[in-house]
Structure formats: C-alpha cells, structure tokens
Length: 136
Image (cartoon, rainbow, N blue to C red; front, side, top):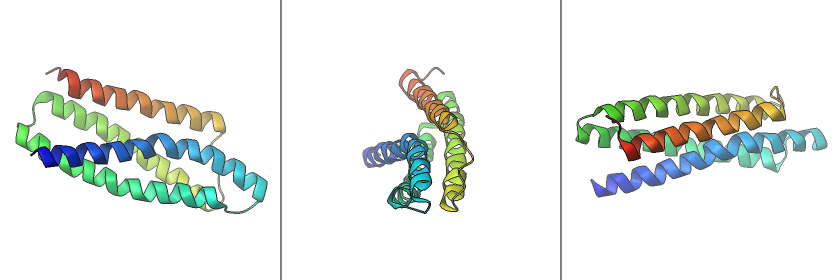
C-alpha cells in the first residue's frame, strides 16, 4: 500500500506541474508563433509536456481510486474525486487549446490564459485541504 501512495504522489506532482505550466507555456508559444510565423521549439516542448503528463494523470487517477477503494471510499474521498474531476476537465480544456495551437490557432488572450492558469491553483488547494482535513 505504501508503494501505491508513493506512486500516487509522484504522479500527482508530475500532473500538477503540467496543469500549472502548460497554460503559461501557451502564452509564450503564442508570442513565439507571432514572432516566427511558424511552429517553433516552444510548441514542441509544450506538446511533449502535455502528452507526458497525460500518462501521469492516468496513473494518478488509477492509484487514487485504488487507495480510495482500500479506504472504503469515505465522504472526503468522494469530495476529492469531484475536485479532481474538475481539474481533469480543466486539463482536457488545456489539451484542446494545445491541439488548436498546434494548428497555429491561438484564440485565447494572454489575460485569459493567465486567469485560466490561476484557477487551477485554487482547485489544487481545495484538493489538498480535503486530503489534509478530511472534513467528513
């Protein structure tokens, strides 16, 4: 069980890195695309980061469900799963923006991407609070 926790925490850390970094990278990728007029190295890095962390997200979800199962799914675990689901939707939306950017389409403004990036911070704080406090 301890190894499952370790794998879960490592996977979550990697996924969270991408949740925080990819929207910010889109800002710089957009600027690079405007400057170069073509797909540059920052775009490649952003796509690779997103793809790699998608695998980590799946591992984090699988190990989290395993841990929740072993705990008998108390109420706080259901709350955590709901919050993680919201983060997963945020991450999928990020992926949609990455795929559009891959085609040279940057619809979102820098301000939108900055706010979008910060929203995930509040989601992660809520997850951490739920895990630490275990309110019910």
